[in-house]
Amino acid sequence: MLITIISGGGVGGLTLALALSQYPDIVVDVYEAAQSFYEIGAGFAIWPRAFKVLRKLGHDFEQQLLQRCGYNFTEEYVPGIQHRKSDQAVGFHLFDMVTKGNQLRFHRADFHGYFSRISRRLPDRSRKSPITLIFRDGSTATCDVLIGADGVKSAVRPCMMRELAEGMDSDSKQSVLSCSNPIWSGVTAYRTLISAEKLRARCPDHRVFSGGFTQYLGKDAFFLGYPISLGKYINIAGFTLQPDLVNTAYEADARIPRRSFEGKADSDWVGELTAEQFVKPFKNFEKEAQVLLEKKAHFGPCTP
Image (cartoon, rainbow, N blue to C red; front, side, top):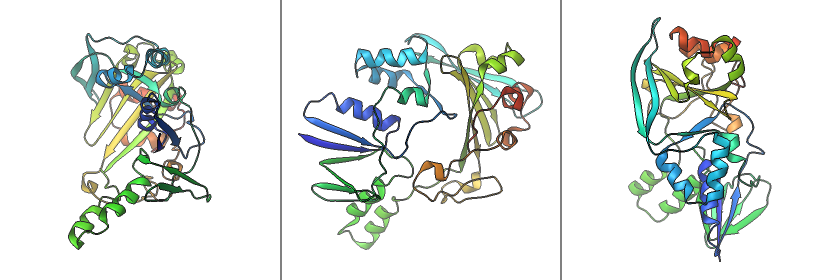
């Protein structure tokens, strides 16, 4: 019997756990720091190739996903993402991306709702054979295989890098240890949900109700919108780039606001914004985009 622990209960960790659990000689435990996957602006889409992989996890799993998505999967060519040049008073259509197979779009909490979750803090360190995980509360767990699916702030990655570096020469050791900490892309993400009902009352023919992605593009900033949760919400995800900070160490900046990376939980460096702070990076975008970002569209929690 192979005992496997997956550190991290995100989309990747839970999907892997479901796949491994189909083998009777593998015991899988998932350790996740979060108490729950609460309702925050965090929609995501599964592309056709990834969905074909998920289908192999069983018919019941496939039907659960489709039920949460609200529409069927097709492998026909369909409109995928509309792209607009939007950082000006009058925007214009650039092109439509057509995909072989449609995207399945979810609220992250809906996707996680299918899985069982174990709530524990990530291990701070591990030991060799058998692998022993020591948690902050002093409890321990052992396994034959430890898989790190714990994201950018991984506790598993530096453990692995330190073990790999043992016995190496100075230059090789330095090279390996340099991979312990992430390097920032210079991109800050903004997420929120808006009420589809309130947006429809204000702008019933808005493009975002067409069913696919719409991307509003600008220089060093863009955002996209699409319906999730059976049309209840419009998911908004925005991104800003600071080119001079690409490939640097992430640092807090209270003026943005950009929170400190320190702290073990995502809640320590992801926090709520006011609607005004959320809109600011996109304030010069076209009217169609601004309608999505106006306070009257009814923001949910906003996060940078």
